Length: 605
Ligand SMILES: Cc1cc2nc3c(=O)[nH]c(=O)nc-3n(C[C@H](O)[C@H](O)[C@H](O)COP(=O)(O)OP(=O)(O)OC[C@H]3O[C@@H](n4cnc5c(N)ncnc54)[C@H](O)[C@@H]3O)c2cc1C
Image (cartoon, rainbow, N blue to C red):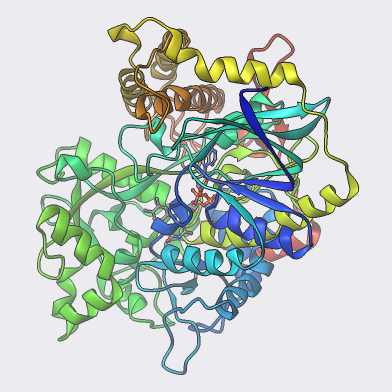
């Protein structure tokens, strides 16, 4: 008898966030047998934490909006390293995906005439984010979950996939363990959709929850698929900085969209001092114009606080380093000031930003309707991930698809806020459609017993090793977080990143000796020991790609190469395992937009 159970599906979706659920719904609509595996409980994915909204050019609040403007904003935000076709599909299909969500029961905030309300967000030319207060992700997950469970999808909760299984050169399934009982399982599938989200837990300060350890990227890479753009990690400008126990928790960009301003310890709105040329024509000249923009004046331009995240995060970093920061190492984000403009500001803030109001009240004893918040950058999102075909979302490993945050291509060097939730819906659906089509054309692959036996040995090995303080899983995790935060963070230098690679190599060899104790049921030490492999792999990929990109672009800022480099601006960095097993970083030309799309970009400049 094998030490594991075997379960068969036509399409296996790994991850139950927005991308995974949308893929599962699409695949089951194509009448194939679908299974969803997720690391925690259904409904608890990262997507549920999304606050500000989902970007779609519905043009409900400003009729000048449309797919062309959304496409151009996304390309500009990504500094033209985006896959143009993904940006085009995304901009064109996002409105239909949002309306579909509404038809499945999502209750968005409304305009006075009853249409879906849209709010301002960084880098979007017009108000574009459909939202539900600042709890949009909750509504999205609730709706997808409700809809999904009526489609006959099998859900395997609290299961962590540890290895992808191959049959020759195609994917044949996945090997997993369930956290509750510690049992091992083999999932056989004709097609697999990877939808595992981000990598934030590899860094010390992050808005991400415990599940985001880069598993999808690492599993795909290990199985032979290409990764791409891994150097582009988004540091969101506004995370909580105090008290220490909540450091990194996100403060939505919606605060700035509603008129919140950033000030340093001198009380100065420092964002007016540094407006990048690419955005100069679209940015307000005065505080007064910025406020008018936030209140919907179509003739006003956006305040500099709503410049792209990469830029705002670096400006905050600069203020803190120059000694003009707040008492706990951030800067001040003030929405309370709008009482000068709105007599009912307290109710207004509580209605528009209920989550933020409660978050600060409960966690920091700050009333944001009266006082400024202290905020600073937090590791939030990764633009890079599994390299996919723009139409089908298939990776370079046949039968393996990827969607959502774990896939690369749409966002280029920097993601605009709100473009993730729309990404999940648009490309989650596509991944599910194409995975189902693939499953109809292919039989189940053979799952090699040797591969399963090797995966089982690897999973169980930490129990068999001798305990030693220097290989405790939490210690290794903590050292990795310090290394990535300090050496591969928001401002990067070659010499520091080279040190990071040495540290990662040392951690890898210690992780190969990692030991845990206790039994297999709900064993957090064991879980962390298994997570380490993915976190170390994605950390190495991020660091190697960041060393190779010798310029500053989007979220990647090199102190030793502070300018953009024209030639580097024409390449994506592909991460691939070489013949000798070592990680290779291979430059490849960025696909060039069609003449029509180039014309649209020019026209919208
Ligand atoms: C606080 C916060 C606020 C945000 N606000 C916004 C916003 O307003 N607008 C916006 O567009 N974006 C926002 N984002 C970003 C956005 O929420 C995420 O990028 C997006 O939700 C990712 O969705 P996903 O479906 O790719 O993955 P996730 O929602 O992250 O789901 C990943 C799934 O994969 C599972 N998983 C992971 N590893 C494994 C494994 N090894 N085995 C099995 N299952 C696994 C997890 O359990 C989970 O079910 C926000 C992010 C945060 C953290």
